[in-house]
Length: 457
Image 1 (cartoon, helix red, strand yellow):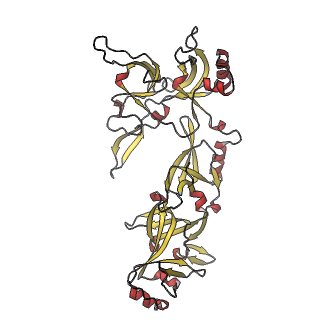
Image 2: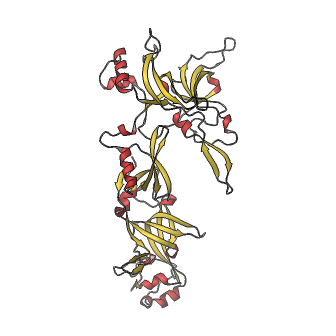
Image 3: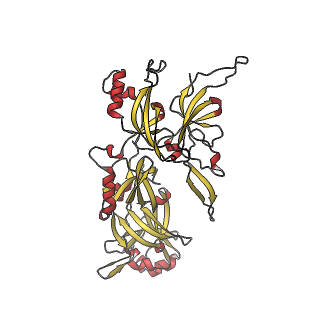
């Protein structure tokens, strides 16, 4: 049995990509990297007549030279190539051709007439592209480094195949219209594309096994115009709840809670070769990001995301960060000045509130209500919570603190450090401790659990 199949991707053995490792960045002289090849036809494996040694198969391949505007096809020995695997983008835009399965779904026999009618009704004037498209589209090269050592990368698009339109079809062999080994039809699709090299339109025939069918974004949902919705959201300054590419579990979660979504503010629509994307500002990473427009996204207004902001002016009174009554299990957006004097923005989920006491005797003397508190060992940390009037109360695991209510002056006490322990979404849900005095700004997030958390299937 052949180790290769029509439509599979292969590379010359000197290529840096290996098996599923297709995200390797190419440095030095990237032009030495050969193209991604698509198998068109396979000849049976042969063996040396004298030694019986396996001397491989002959593989008929194809690729596109985008610089010269030409499809190149030739033969190569299977011992000179490696097979690679690449999962297409997680969207419903690229579809594998399976004419036989489509006929079976509607209960039609795989006859010549039915195959022809299927192509005429469903694929004529539709878009197609070579199966190497995503590997070539996301291939990166690195040519130098910045002064700070970061890599500078750009796209390596020398072999990016063009988007084409089906304008006709034919059977490869007028006499034998089906493959005697697989029983599948020997159909070739006639395609037309704009040749950027010659500045003209070109046409050619291609075996359907080496192509993906490209669905229009507008056809993904009949009842919803996805592109218009995104365009309107930009004009109307709307937000979306958007899925993140790599979900992660919150540290300390007893119920296995995962962060699956983020808040995004739409900024622009981008067309990328054969599909549309939305540029948005990601409030979890506080950075610009991009997502493929292939499904409806949940719209949400700013007033339904963000609550009170601290510090802020309210009726002539300026609130301070310390006026925010942090609640366990609630989400907040904060601006934080860290130990290295670097200001960062992040979203946190409160896990605990505690006070670090520098001098216990001074602490008890300052807050006379605590004079009767006589622990066996002087504590350095105590947990705290908020009273209705804004005052705080402290408590320990053994509940041994009498008269534990403290005034708001605690937030200005140099003898203590007010601390927040929280899951930091910028750090993949890991626990981080934040000094209250280093938080420059806080904004409440309304119902953050429903916004960020989800179930993994």
